[in-house]
Length: 266
Image (cartoon, rainbow, N blue to C red; front, side, top):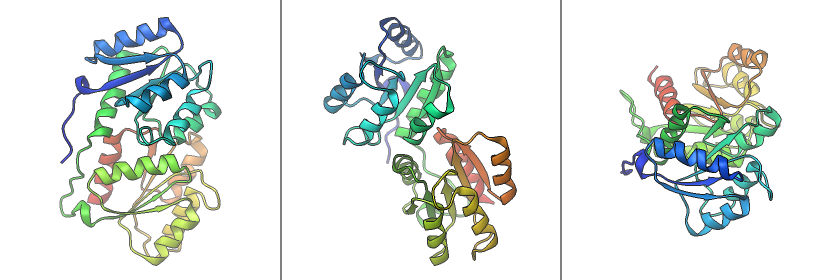
């Protein structure tokens, strides 16, 4: 059983090069009830700290003297203490090209600068739910009996989604790196739910939805697409193809669990 934790239990590592910004963010963290906060100014210092004293959450800026926030989270994902470590970006960066790599690395939340304290609180609550999620509750299905296929070409994002689905109580999870590999799995066996990315090589999420709806033996298979795609025309085409639900990256764990429950309860 996952132990219940609250905001006050979280330990935070704040990675922020500006002393003034670090002081302001620490003040906001204390306003929402957090007091176990350590601060560093570079990515290298963060990696050293996490290697010895892993926090519950990294709250990070985007740019440091020695690396970027994207490079920091990718370096973390390659370490034992950082592979599943929740990561929240706080930055004025808003260019999709610069944010996409960090989204795909499994960032838990992205907060703009300046941010509202309530936005910070929501991001922290998402961390609590990520660390100690509730099991999936279904009227007439046992999560242990579900077969879920997770599809994503980013191994970091794939790992994050699989971890969350496992903590919902699902034990039978198949992984695929692209739509073509997912289609092969669907052709060979039965699944109760597909959770897929949109932008993938070889066969993207839309092509996978088309395959499921038009060519597979499971045309009614629920498909949840978790994506950072924001082009309205492309997303409209995906909806017309028959995707069951869409969820943004980074996603709220509570929202993902609710959408999953709604899809499987139909």
